[in-house]
Length: 218
Image 1 (cartoon, rainbow, N blue to C red):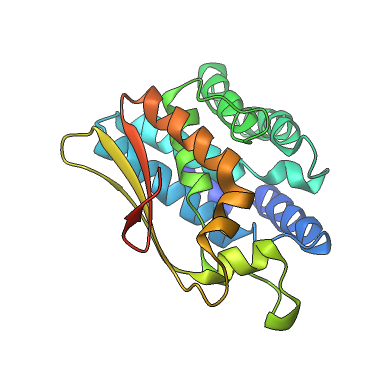
Image 2 (image 1 turned 90 degrees about the vertical axis):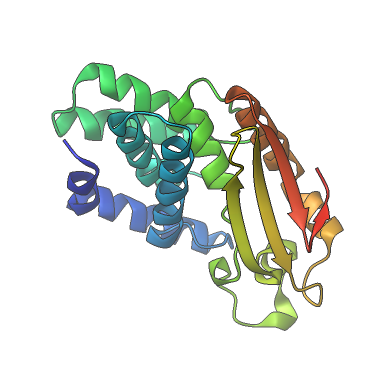
């Protein structure tokens, strides 16, 4: 079973769409194919750069593609719900148990409220997911009615996640238009996420650095 098989699966696509629709109804930013695709790409980048084998990289992409399907059930405990749903999907698709056992805990541990980087796949998923902050995740087109999440995401005009050549540092570099959101706004809603990113980086023996408008903040 490949990552491409998962992306082409109609059941998975339906669940991703339904999860995103539920979050849209609740006023959350985009969590559809753009988000899971970005997360899969960044998880791949992290593990490839750190020298992990091709199959581990692909399993991380699969975990990233599935990580938010639990939002179809409820935003609360969505990581746990998603892990159970992924177990059923992957079992039905014929994935070996030993590989399912690597994907499921990564999904179950990606949320900042309860998550822990328990494995390379889990750590990569955390860093990839929490670093996806960008303007086009905002659904609301009326700037006058932006809430803090809209303001913060809309303010980010560029987002880069980079590992240094020595593999000692992973840096999230944001370019922020402060007309829409301030640095303090960012920390108000994302502090827990950044702390979890720091833990995930430490799993790989790296430091995590957050830079906003060329200023180092973590």
